Length: 349
Image (cartoon, rainbow, N blue to C red):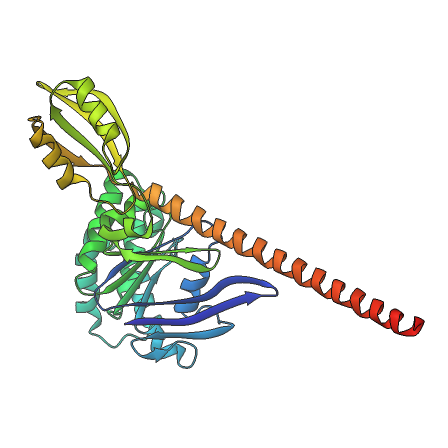
């Protein structure tokens, strides 16, 4: 449905988007994450046809956005962070205005009625937008994005400023829209992505640094595996065994107890699944394991780790490039001096 190949957006010597490539299939709900200045908004603006690219291609449903922007835009519904609302209009007037602006050919009455039912704004259809709550204004913004029944819907920070109840309502709405549309959710609220999205793409310094299914995002981080394990047995001996066991790099006893079982937090080596081996060891010692809980990294931890890692790699490449240039300069200088020395020796002879 969406295919971006080697996209570059450069401002002078600065790269806002630096060789970005990814594709999004039909019916996917994708979270597009990144810190401030990472290139999220620039990428979204190019995708929606609001901004041109320096190089690369962006295709929506097989249509090149730069070559045929009008046809591509008809397939996209966009809700920016600040919904483009006319506060002095009623909801009815605004949606009719948007309908005409988009040159929509669907049956007007039926189409707008269906949209209002989907986003649940039928009860405020005749009210002035200025008098609506933030949550209802957001719904009206989503309604205008749905006019024309676009195949792709892009949300930029759709829940900023909403109360918890409104946030849950918008989340549910996005999930429902994902049944019939491809949805891109650009946000910095990580809980939002975890609750709604099927897949996560993380961009930093203009480059894609992670692209994984939401449930598999931890694969993007070479992290150790942590578990809380409940074991029935003498605490001191159990803890000593855990600390000495091959494959476990850290173990500690926690204050938590479950009957006659003590709880321990253990951390295994990167890429090693310690669970089966630990089970057999405890069985041999007749120490029952009555509970095992994986302690995965939170999405916030993963996000920070990935972003920090990408920045460190960039710094390392920069240092390596500088060191290479210095070495080349030294070699050239040495060679020049050698040539001058040889020439001088030739003259003296």
